[in-house]
Image (cartoon, rainbow, N blue to C red):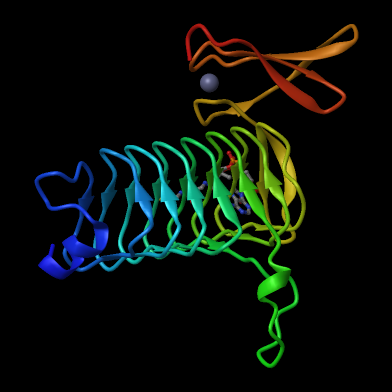
Length: 212
Ligand SMILES: CC(C)(COP(=O)(O)OP(=O)(O)OC[C@H]1O[C@@H](n2cnc3c(N)ncnc32)[C@H](O)[C@@H]1OP(=O)(O)O)[C@@H](O)C(=O)NCCC(=O)NCCS
Ligand SMILES: [Zn+2]
């Protein structure tokens, strides 16, 4: 890291508890948690907040005011624009795309019309997926590679295609869940990790997290 960049982050290499590759820029007034690694050619802009133990791959852009939780993995070529919030343990696949303006026109300023995108804890977004702004991706939801998300995604839902459609449910461990009906509700047991779920009115809830 260059001296100039050390000054910008306000910490020298000895004091800093996160890693920034020398090819990256971290603007003053951004906050970065301990143990986070920021690899080549990234730019973290002012007032951005990045939690602990995150990994930003090559060519990741973190716009002003963006909030990223702990232990998030952001793969190569992802831009997080103003209005994006990632909770903890979110996975952003390579070259996936966030948006923050729904109807951009080059000649019309739309800076005050940003729509928020909230990605909740432990959600996964596959490579090359696109999230239209103004929607919430639920906890542990899984967006397949190349999907175009046009609406809110429930917790544990698997969404694929363009436009994105729900094609099933995903376990916390990342395997598909199969539900079986018994009386008023449906249940699912993951043979891989032992997690148990119940589904009522299309809302999936974890029953027993002891083995996850
Ligand atoms: C969605 C995913 C988890 C697999 O889902 P799956 O339903 O178990 O996949 P299957 O292989 O059983 O395919 C089931 C059907 O869905 C289709 N399908 C699978 N993934 C798809 C996707 N991302 N988009 C559209 N269709 C998809 C398959 O072609 C298949 O269709 P068919 O029944 O007509 O043959 C996976 O394909 C995916 O997209 N993973 C993300 C990978 C990624 O981006 N990683 C980033 C880090 S490298
Ligand atoms: Zn599981």
